[in-house]
Image 1 (cartoon, rainbow, N blue to C red):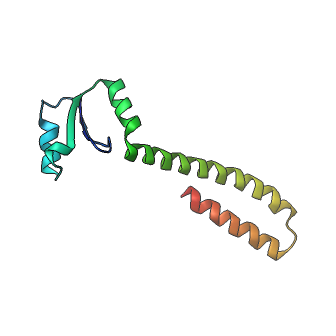
Image 2 (cartoon, rainbow, N blue to C red):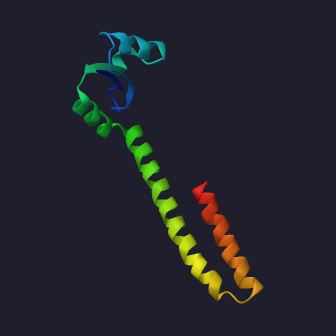
Image 3 (cartoon, rainbow, N blue to C red):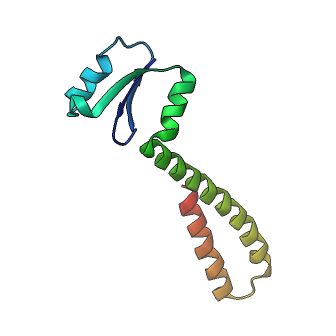
Length: 110
């Protein structure tokens, strides 16, 4: 497979499994990158994974995805806790607090 990345930042801007030599460079130039700013490399699956591990955009996207997963897991736990609190609530004010917290959990989950 071939990858094309920005030299200065190591951002992978394209990957193709069956491209011919120079295809990704042409694509990058067509997309507005300067030829001197990008490089095309032949890599195997491990090389592609290694390139992604250095790609700051890929890393940021992975961290953001992990944060979403963590927030959703925490919301599910919070809903279980609120279920228990609901059994103890004995005033409208207490119920209002629980409902607002449930709404926040639902927002995270959707």
